[in-house]
Image (cartoon, rainbow, N blue to C red):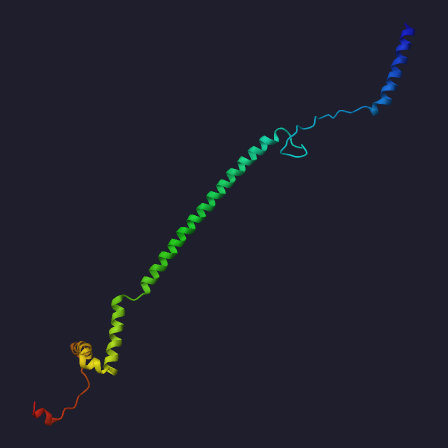
Length: 161
């Protein structure tokens, strides 16, 4: 048995020396298998679950973009309301500061009366237009108790009246 035992030890040592010497030349398998081929990721660095993760990420981005669009739409609606309010305020301001038609006509009538009293044309006088504009003004002054300037009358002329 010793002979058999001795031969076993010697063969084991030779085998061990042979394996250790040739072990460097053998191919070493990686501890993690390479990822599956993915055409969407050149280089194949992504795992099999990255497609699902990208899908979830894209769906989340869609939701975020939809919310941002809703926010922008609401801002646009608020801007429309502000624009309408400003237009309404501007219209109210213009209406409050624009003279009414009767006020404009009073100014026009006053300018016509001044023109007829100061420099009436011959047509204004002969047609009676000047008289028609002056008489209502004089009547309104008389109704208010206003006296005109004194007009000297020749006493001889009064005898013939």
